[in-house]
Amino acid sequence: MKHTILALLQQHSGTFLSGADISRRLGVSRASVWKDITALRQEGFTIEAATNRGYRLTDGPTFLHTTEVLRLLTTKHMGRAFTLDDKVDSTNRRALSAAEAGAPDGAVFATLEQTEGRGRMGRPWYSPTHADASLMMSVLLRPRTPVVNAAQITLVAGLAVYQGIEDLLTDPPDSMSSPIPSYSPIPSSSPEPATPKTGIKWPNDIIINGKKTAGILTELVAEIEHIKAIAVGIGINAQIMRFPPELNDSATSLSLETGRTYSLNGLAASVLNRFEPLYDRFLENGFLSDILPIYQKNCVTLGQDIKAVYNNKEIYGRAVTINARGELIIRLATGSDTALNSSEVSVRGLMGYT
Ligand code: BTN
Image 1: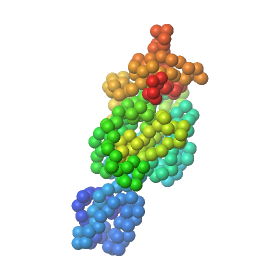
Image 2: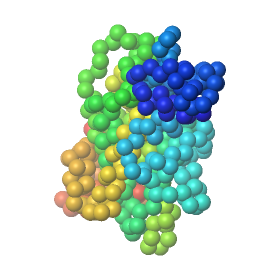
Image 3: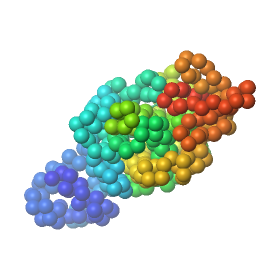
Image 4: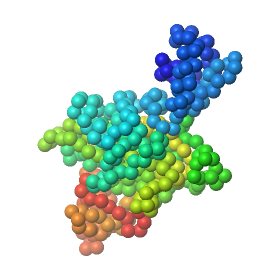
């Protein structure tokens, strides 16, 4: 019943609905309406109550809430099966085991808390326990495409997360962001920071003002030729205000860079709303036609002098382009070019993080 009341308030968002009206429409007592309104408030919804006017929903929670994500989605299938856990070891592991049990293409597995967040190259992923500090979700995909194309999906996901974050930073839709309240570590009187500079660091780190704010780990289950399931694990630092010392120089969060708070529901929806059309285009037209040029335009690694670590060996060169397979081409001091595969190398810029 609580969810029906929420849906009703959402349909009438901004206008008051009287308690009598709600109880008549849903065939429940006014006392039961009041009980559910109280429960929704405890879940983070802001619901105004006014004498003789009734109830009005004015804001949603900043932490993940399935109803809120579904309300903000504009996708046909991606995220429509949305599972939110209170606590998991890793959403990627969760998505891949759900895949074994038959979960569909586009299903999303998110969590409020992640105890063993995994990063690329076997590193751990910093997953703070505060409920709206970071977005942790995995999108399960079952593409009918050969295994060699998995690296391209990693780049498609990177572009989607980049675009989803950009959308949010440039034009936050309804209930997606608000200025940081005065109890936060950023004083409310401080001036709004300058427009943040965002970009993709190949293959799929999202960089804001030179520091990493989001990462993606793509893991797959495959037979020799055929992909059975891919978990695209997305971690976005949203409201993290302090990082462990070892990450301080390289990591940042949306809030640290913009001085605003972001609803994880808006953030999740924004990313998925971008991901679905890109993924559909990828399946239909391939990577090369229109996705690679957009990716390259927003890739901050290109033109940089970089160091790549491959098989414990360091390679230095200038990143010159990305090829049709999604590999990064670097020009070595000898003048010859070499292609780096995203699943095998870690890349760092020599001038700053990117
Ligand atoms: C990276 O190293 O940049 C990739 C980080 C990916 C982190 C996310 S959080 C949700 C999903 N579950 C995991 O265990 N990892 C990914």
